[in-house]
Amino acid sequence: MKKILSTLFILAMTTQILVAQNIDNADLLFKKKHFSSASKIYLDSENKSQEVLEKLGDCYYYTSDMKNAAIWYKTLIDKHYEDNTIESIYLFRYYHALKGINNFDEADKWLNIYNDIDIEHIVPSENLNTKKYFKTLNTSIGRPFTVHSLSINTKGSDFGVSIHGDKALFASTRKGIHIYKWNNLPFLNLYEATIDEDGELVDPTKLNSTINTKNHEANGIITKDGQTLYFSSNQHLGKKKGTDKNNVLHLNIYKASLVDGDWANVVELPFNNRKYSMMHPALNFDETKLYFSSDMPGSVGSFDIFYVDINKNGTFGVPNNVGEKINTPHREQFPYISSKNILYFSSDGHFGMGGLDIFKSDKVDGTYQTPINLSDIINSCRDDFAFVIDEENDFGYFSSNRPGGVGDDDIYRLTRGKLQIITSSIYFGFAKWNIREDTAEKLDEIISTLNKNPDMSIEIGAHTDARGSAEYNMDLSHKRANSVREYFIENGISDLRVLSKGYGESQPLNNCAKKGNCTEKDYSINRRCEFVILNQ
Image (cartoon, rainbow, N blue to C red; front, side, top):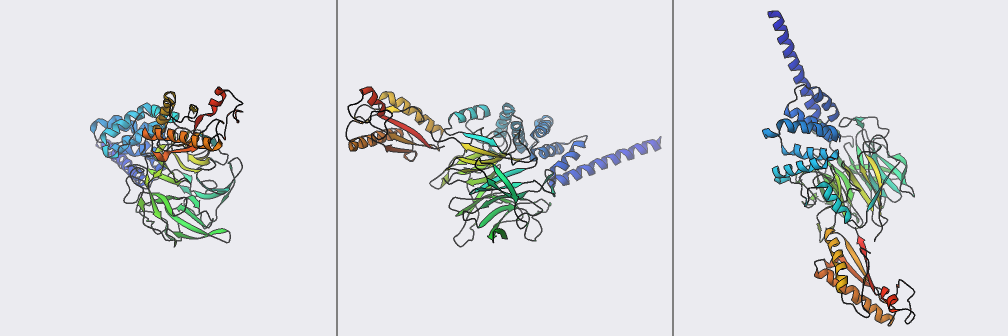
């Protein structure tokens, strides 16, 4: 009997030791961010501690498996929420996991709880109701986007387009050999493709081995003169790969020069640091600043958007944080500066659909304004990022791991609706330019739309009928346009957002182009003011 008891005791102790060793192995894999491998060991643990539940949820969260992340965060909360031992970050991740499976009502509930608990890391919004927020947002968008799938996507990961003329750079795991243990996909390489007349990316070609190594290369951008390439990588230059003490790979930013038609002379940017990541490079329109995302010291959150000045002699300034209007206590990544000086970026710290959402912010008097979500046409319940747009031609690309895609991350093409008479025209009396009572109501509707869209600006185009001289009518149309503009300004709209223009008698809507050949009713149709959205 003693022998049996001793054997059972030894077996029990051996089992406990093996379980502890397995958890230790899983913890080591987790620390190295080998989440796919770590999750399998945590799953086999019979008595899952609070720490195991936290890490199990995180393994799925960081590999974008929001269904399983939601399951294990819920198990964590059900078992330990009443103990007041759960850090608030797990409530934040549970909120995003719930959005990732389209459970918006429950997600909103947990975001409110999170905001009440962690007031320092609050997710701000005037309306913490996802469905209502996007319904309201969509009604105020003057130039909606249309999203198109692309045939270039693979079953792996394809993302991060930059446009250079009729060429595009993007990152892809296609044809990769070496496996990245974070998600068990091959490491990323940079490819160049041609943009065809339909906006498809065709004939992808891998950049040379000077750029692409055994590790990650992504987010490449080329200067306007075609001579310099900036990109993210965790290689490089014959040195030990960019890992920290836990053997975690960090991305840094490099640049290469075009020599005899190919990329060469790769150099590391001077503000890199192997202890944290610097990635997602983006140039402003005149190429005097380089924007990027980083978790360096001085960040507001886990990742912030920074910029450095590019000096005329080719040297770089020191990193500057773009500020708390943009950066939150959570993630801000993938900056892009358009030709109109609009900052587009992705964030999970501003209120959105779930995961990373794409936002935009105008720069006014040197300061970025409150970011605006690009709506649920662009944003999904998962990660949406790497937005670029040709503002003049109203097309661009973004990336997403949304359901229904071909692979892990996919590239999508977008087109934007053309400029558009916010409301029907308003009309004036003969030789008059005062605002009538019936037209004031329509102007108030436009003012309401402008207030809902703080980055929107409009043109006021005023017209006259054909009676009177051309010089008189041009002057009259300017007076009509200015009277409407003054009405907007008196009602709180900035003068920078309303452009007034008089067209005189030059653009009639009917055949009343001469004095004396039309009725008063026909002439009155041309005594009008029209409105065109200039940016949205």
